[in-house]
Image (tube, rainbow, N blue to C red; front, top):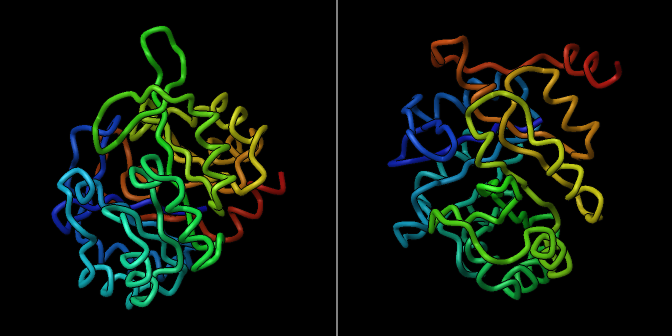
Length: 248
């Protein structure tokens, strides 16, 4: 179960349907709290880097890695093997690719060959069109893409991705549950681990995603916001609660 932190201007933010970013605090403080709560894994996604055509903020990421007691994944602005190498040298354990992978699947192959598939995560965003059809969404371009999303995830798996992070734009920050149909469709064709993101509002939603075929679940709002007024409060369930949930 993975907290997914969104980074913008070096601060931690939370969005709703990829818009209306709300500042929720300092990422270093959040990481320290997650350390205390013995989080399994953490992923940090810079939502501005690719859109603004800039590289990862290596100094800030080095701070993150130095604070993390858990495996750290990072995504945002990664376009080259050298950038990935530098991130790994700073202590990042997984790099998360989206735009670069969609534009150039061979980059996934090159990185997987160099660093191992287990270190390469491909992130895919999907969004419903006006007819209710699931479409591939480009987060940096902020538009629907023409390619069939299921064909794309299978291609990226074949290219060497070791894991898929699948996010629903329509469910982002809304906390009304994961898109279970999307999870089922992806899980049915993938042989690599599938991490579901977008929609978690309570513990039951996490279980539903796993039962639909997700290998792991990621969430943002569930771990950083609380209550109907979405007050900022970093939280993470204890091991006994998780064990009870997934063994029920």
